[in-house]
Image 1 (cartoon, one colour):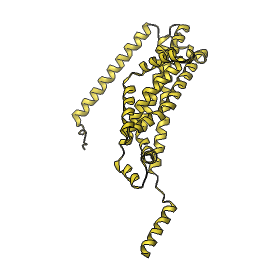
Image 2 (image 1 turned 180 degrees about the horizontal axis):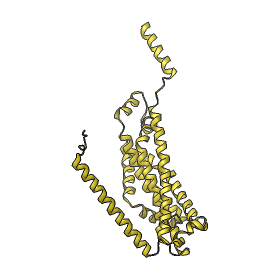
Image 3 (image 1 turned 90 degrees about the vertical axis):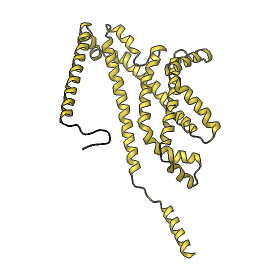
Length: 296
């Protein structure tokens, strides 16, 4: 049995694959043993380094949960602004009018080319010099601004690629029915492109959640990852334990987001597969047309 990509492995190839797998697992186990031994030598695996996360609720109520709330706040604001803005920019890049398409393309390519951390730093400087935003809220504003500018540009390209991936006949059929360009985009192309774009959009939303940590690194924003400094300072330099717990929180959060998006995608695909229903008005119009033809 063969496929387009590769031939089915024979007995010798199967034996080689088994040997390769055993060697890889052995090397992986050796690397894990070396890492754990090094951590044990540095006393990073001692119980007192990990026990505060189980025995002391203040670690969670004072540091981790407030940091998680700040992470979710910045991510939620960024997503709520970046999604519609990115969709608008993506539609603008598909415009038939050059005076719309070219400026929007310049904006998208400009902000997509700048690292998001640099955008955050520029935003913080602008808020400090030219606005009256309080220093308590300035880090949040800067983080959200940087995330929105960068991710809206990326989402614009996702939207443009999703719409262009649809068969050309979809737009032609809408035009033949007398629909305008805006109606075609809003009622025909975008609803179908959502299922195509959803995996890429979910990946970008996960990136937004993780990139909030950049604000804590250089702007002093009190998000989840930045809380490691406070925890290690108050609980005996348990850096490895703190980073591990924070990493697990990020994994759980992003897994939940991916799971919800997967369920949404499955529902959308099932909705596309549902049988279409003929509207009574269309049936009536067909009957009238048939009577007119027979009468003629």
